[in-house]
Amino acid sequence: MVCNELLWALGTTAFVFLYAKKGTDVMQAYNISNTTANLFYTIFAAMSIGIQILVGKKLGENNIEEAKENAGKLILLGTMISFVSGIILISIAPFVSRLYNTTDEITNLSIQFMRIV
Image 1 (cartoon, helix red, strand yellow):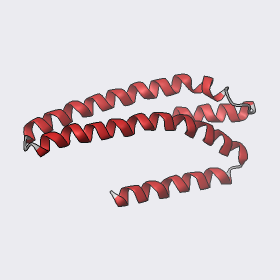
Image 2 (image 1 turned 180 degrees about the vertical axis):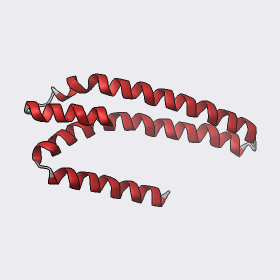
Image 3 (image 1 turned 120 degrees about the horizontal axis):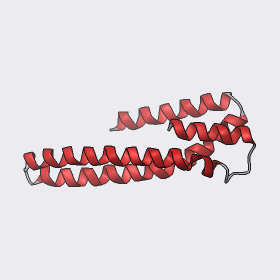
């Protein structure tokens, strides 16, 4: 888990470093898209914790088959929630980007970044 978090932090740092080299417009667009995407990441973090609790409880009860069954159902549910969240993020990207007082170029860049996320 420590290695995962370390690699995640290094990757995020590399992204920000490379975006910063592209100029302030790119950084502003990145910050707009990242702020919005973080709202969705919160949903995924909560979902992850919930899945860990539900599957872990069954494993703790030594009910391996039910834990596997629950894990399969929760993976499917998580995939569906991720798909719907992606559609929502793509749909709201133009509206969220226009809430900020920026140039059209920055607005368009932030919309593209949110669609990539």
